[in-house]
Each structure stands twice: as C-alpha cells, then as structure tokens.
Image (cartoon, rainbow, N blue to C red; front, side, top):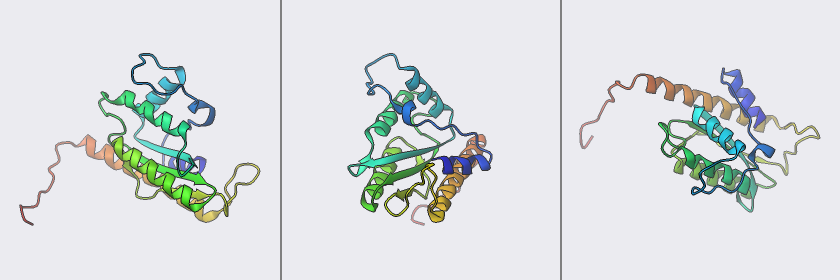
Length: 181
C-alpha cells in the first residue's frame, strides 16, 4: 500500500492511509443510525476521494473480513451525490502466501469494486509473499512487484484526473455511431 500511495503522491495526489487498527470497526449494520468515529472517518475519506487504493490480505481465497466490513460501510454513501465509488478510480491489491489465494482475492476485490460502481484500474496487483517476502522492516524488495505497485498508483491518479476533467465539462458531446455501425 505504501509503495502505491507514494507513487500516487509523486504524481501530485494527496494521500491518506487507513489501515490496520483504523479498520477495526463494529460489524456494519445498515439499520444502526449512529456510526463509530472510525466509521465516520472512513466514510468521509471515501466521500472526498477521487481515487482509492484498496489492499487486502487473502484469507481462505478471498477478501479479509476486516476489509470486507470496511467496504460494507460504503453503503452509507448510497444517497450521496457520488454514491458508493461512483466516478472514482480504484486500485486493487491482494497479498497472500501463494498465487491461488492472491489471485482469487484480487478477483473478489475487483468484483466488489464493480458492485460499488467503482472503476478498477486496468492493473490489479497480487503480491505472493512466498517467493517475495518482506524484510524485517516490512519493505518489499522485489523490484518487479514494486514497479507494478508504482504503476497501479499512477493509474489511479491518471483515471482520477480523466474523470475530473470529464466531470468539469459535462456539456461535451459524445460521438455516437449510427445504428448498425
């Protein structure tokens, strides 16, 4: 996550990391009126974002329960001017000890982003920690994986800028092809 966020920041994006302890939230319940301070912070951060990068460890071949619960909080934006992840670029990262879990967790995360009306970047990154371990300082030393994470951060910024430019000029005509073309 830090590598992708640093790459986005290098392109001029303001970034914020919400992770670990900040994602320990009460189970999301749409019938509950009030939200915890952490839940309100998460919702406000998503609402103000033009781009989002989501990372998840793979548990049993899918998204971790903690990350899925955080994604459930996005339901609070259902009536927002930009509901859910609408108009937002979303980079997806999964980390697992093994290719199969990392790949299936990435697919599940991208499916969830689509369901929340987000635009997953063309590149999603899997980090297989079996051949690519982190060092004792939690730094990733595999240059190929590092390059993919940097590219993902760049894609989130590029897509966010394109979306912002399009939104700023809503009167643009879209070229339409004639029927049967």
